Length: 383
Ligand SMILES: NC(=O)c1ccc[n+]([C@@H]2O[C@H](COP(=O)([O-])OP(=O)(O)OC[C@H]3O[C@@H](n4cnc5c(N)ncnc54)[C@H](O)[C@@H]3O)[C@@H](O)[C@H]2O)c1
Image 1 (cartoon, helix red, strand yellow):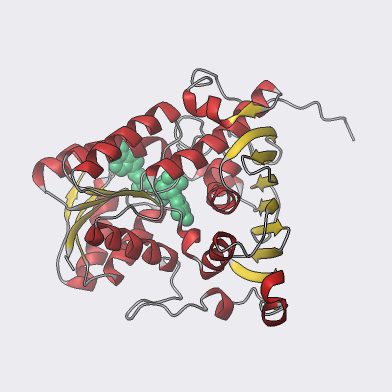
Image 2 (cartoon, helix red, strand yellow; image 1 turned 135 degrees about the vertical axis):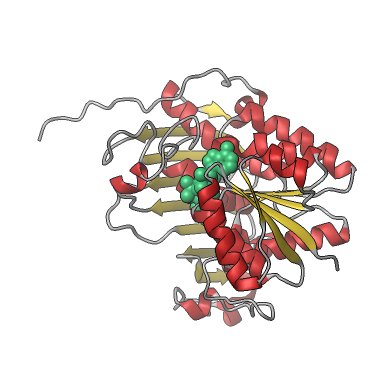
């Protein structure tokens, strides 16, 4: 088992989560560099790391400076979403394994470029993966395994809702937030993409999308704060998707999966309910109570890992990435899968802008690459 020198690009909210995760994995990763256009922010985080480990990571302003001066074996990209591919490609070409924060990027032209770069890097033994930490929740793992095992029979439908609230201050907290160019969308792209990825992981390849988006409770934001969509899948399954950052005070993310032989509900990351016909006696109601911390972390955390930290989901994904590197296999989250989730989100926007159903494969093939995205204005009757 190797110990990899690791650099983190982007020292903001999620960059700190990655620092926490890397420090928890000290026997497999060593944090050697921090990169941020705000070198002040990177230096502050370097202070925290030095206090904790006694070793100070190098600080750089750009990914180009990083690869010129340091040769990290793993590079983590945690910058605004529209910068992900540009930075990941530099790191891959410098020979590093790469872990990219979600979403893969906001632009499909760049995402396809990354897919090519990742495939070329894979041939050289490098691994590239994209964060979707909720795939590693015990609840998601149990539902996915039961579907793969045939326990749901034919999966017939899914209902996914991300009913959150984000304040105006949240959108005002970074120039990039709420912009098409760097956030790539609003409630669905930024907050909802985790749930889109889970929906696709459970239901399979999406075929068409019909959607509406709106901006209803925020100002000075280009993107949507509310999105609704219906999706069809190549298996014949249907799904309903809802994401909002305009639902004060915010409720828990809920994902229902229904099949001819079983159904499950994941609520707030916990398995709230699962009932499979094949083992109805054993499983009926077994998870009926769900939703508390103990259920959420019902799978034993690895030794030395603090399961109460927000970074725990990330730590689980790091284990998969590191095992993929050691075993020379694909990670659970491949670039192709992240590209599909990105295309599904883009398809929602394309459908809402054009006012008609769109095919995901056309979105992936580039048919709408030049379409300018905007939130359609809705005639709201005066109260
Ligand atoms: N997996 C999750 O649960 C999760 C949660 C939050 C954010 N994210 C993702 O993480 C990414 C960052 O989000 P955040 O909330 O941490 O944003 P943030 O604004 O808090 O941090 C972004 C950091 O990147 C830096 N930066 C900007 N341009 C740069 C450049 N060219 N080179 C180097 N650094 C640069 C900024 O100075 C800032 O410190 C986004 O893609 C977001 O979708 C994921």
